[in-house]
Structure formats: C-alpha cells, structure tokens
Length: 121
Image (cartoon, rainbow, N blue to C red):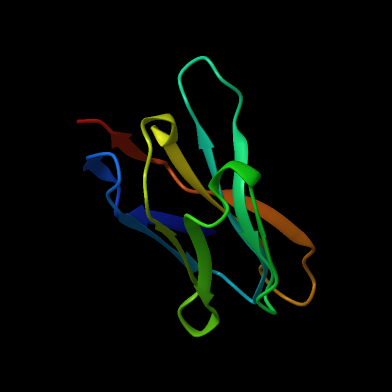
C-alpha cells in the first residue's frame, strides 16, 4: 500500500507564511502528478495546485503569486509554500498523489489525511 503523510499546518496571522509537506511512502514504483487540495466547511474540495513529475505546475487563480508548489522526486515529497496568507485560505489541506505501484499496475489516486490551516488574527 501507499501512505501520504502531511505536516506543516497550523494557526497563522493574516500576511504570514506556512509550508506544507507531504511524503509518500510504501509500495511506489513511480509517482505521476502530485497536488494539494483544500476544503473549507460547507464547501466543495478544490484544487489549489498540482505538479507533474517533470515539474510543470498549475495553480488556482486566487492563490497565484502567493502559493508555490514544488516536489522532490528522490524523496517522493511535495511541498506547498504559502505566503501572504488570508483568512479565506483557512481550510483543511489535502495532499494527493497519482501512484503506480509496479510495472504491472496502473495508476491509483491516494490522499493524505488532511492538515488544518487557520488564518486568523
């Protein structure tokens, strides 16, 4: 199996920064896309940013210029650097990875358990 373990969430004041990390472990042959999603209470889960194995990125318009996604393929880890945080960024943030467990397997989506980010004064 594959596990995604997130870290780095917490409480921060408006204008502050946080860095989320998500490490994938287990039976991994190759990881295709990795991403961060978020879900606020009463709202649908939305894609914040994703990154291909080659480093191409896609970022939600409302966080462009403030959030940066990156990954370390050697460590099977994806990061989300969040700067100039706003109260509306408050959500549970989930890590996502599209993983192939071996040459005889297709790709399967895996999710982390979620980490709370709260932006408040």
